[in-house]
Length: 156
Image 1 (spheres, helix red, strand yellow):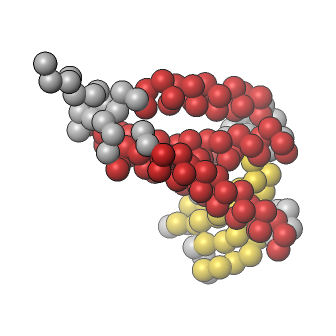
Image 2 (cartoon, helix red, strand yellow; image 1 turned 90 degrees about the vertical axis):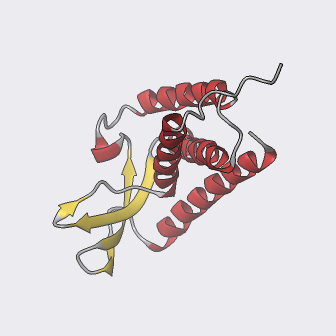
């Protein structure tokens, strides 16, 4: 991976932390502000668990899982072909994981605020870091499907 990968990861971390702080300035905890009727709301929650608040109050499990994920990503990223998609994938994963990890370490919870209701289903509330993690994971899956998860043998 190259220098731009690290810059993108830091920008994702900054954007996520800034958005969380900004929302908490203007919206109270557990308050919901309608943005698009019956579709999109800004709802501030403090999540001590994962998606759907699974394993609530077990932040240490998510801290450990984040640290393990970071170590594994570092180990495996150099085995992936160095291209734009893979660089964005790893940058998205690192930025998202580090930002949510920072929340857990310094606050004891993750600040979530993006709240969607689609076809009557209320999806788990999430944040920009979560979006980055999902995008990064999808891009890595594409890379694996395309066989870009192993460096080509150098010519003899």
